[in-house]
Amino acid sequence: VQVVASGGGLVQPGGSLRLSCVASGFTFSRYDMHWVRQATGKGLEWVSAIGTAGDTYYSASVKGRFTISREDAKNSFYLQMNSLRAGDTAVYYCARDAYGGKGHDYWGQGAQVTVSS
Amino acid sequence: EIVLTQSPATLSLSPGERATLSCRASQSISTYLVWYQQNPGQSPRLLMYDASKRATGIPDRFSGSGSGTDFTLTISSLEPEDFVVYYCQQRANWPLTFGGGTKVEIK
Image 1 (cartoon, chains in turn cyan, purple):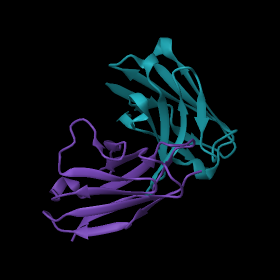
Image 2 (cartoon, chains in turn purple, brown):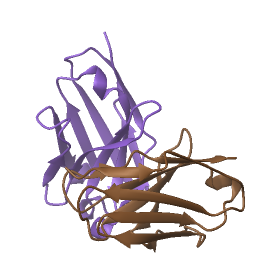
Image 3 (cartoon, one colour):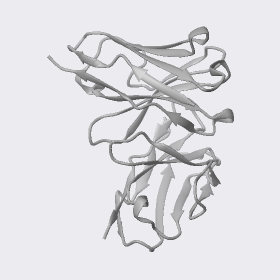
Image 4 (cartoon, rainbow over the protein chains, first blue to last red):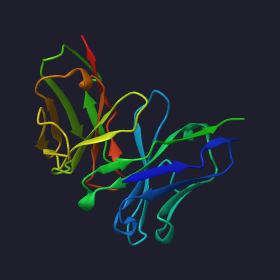
């Protein structure tokens, strides 16, 4: 089982960025998938989730600015981030959710997103 | 949203000692609580789910307890690799939330 995040980088405040996460080693379409972020030296912050039926969920801090989506045919899911702020600077982890919502059992290595002018 | 408060922020203990970490929820979450462990510079690892069930491959020196609003992660005898950071996460309501973390450091 592997999940690999990509698409991070440096973006100016107000800009946009799209993160991707590619999964392998399991039947991707059967699992809920999540994004979690962590600013340098800080704790974990849950960001967003997408269910197997395409249902989506967001934290209050990103709702209305970020959009999560999935493409089962490509074993991939995405996080479109718009109207980025300095406070969005963090490592963004993609993670698989275990069946029955029993926690994030596989995590990617993380993608660094830096919002700065 | 449900707020999780972890205490203490830092726990200073010696190898072989027992560690007791607390996670308190702002409202009842039944047993929908998960614990993670994070080594510096690495992705988190799932430790416990449903408050008291160990994830695959987790040694039995780790145990969890609690329900409602008060939860505990116990490490019965600290090994050198256990001196890292631990987070709780509630799975009862959207949005999911994490606690602020507890760092277990060598005394």
